[in-house]
Image (cartoon, rainbow, N blue to C red; front, side):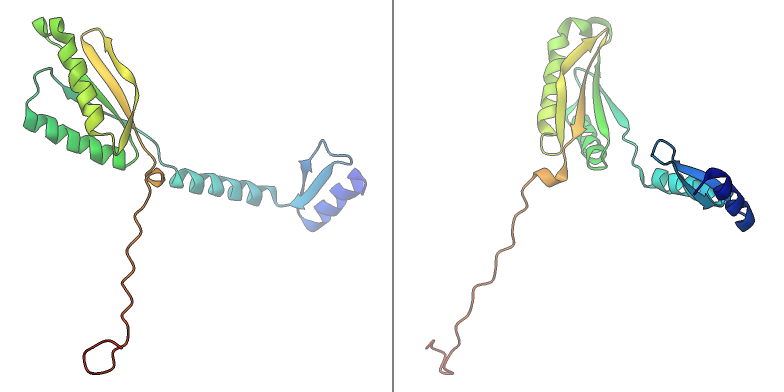
Length: 166
């Protein structure tokens, strides 16, 4: 239909004429309430934003001589963060003369990454920047691990009533 006729018909219905595909031949337009359409679009965007999960980077700080209990405690926090779908940044801070023993920090970070191998994957090697060494660990997808199938119970053969099997 011609554009002026379409505009007139949309006005008679109390609606707006909206171009759907302006580059099509002929252009495609639709008669609808523009305010209602805008409202629905905003509602869809709001609902989509609600369902999004924003991945955060959680940071755990260590020292080169971190005690075993403190290490385990922070490792458990990292496991929880990775299971929630967040990334973990493990940082070893060197203070004073500790900077002379950066190999201890890198060794600690590699051990940390190995301990989290089941739930997280390391992104690159430990890096030394200034007085800090760090490594970033990303969560692994849970679907990648094969699931174990439950065993089926063995079939029992019917008995003849005397206790011995027939």
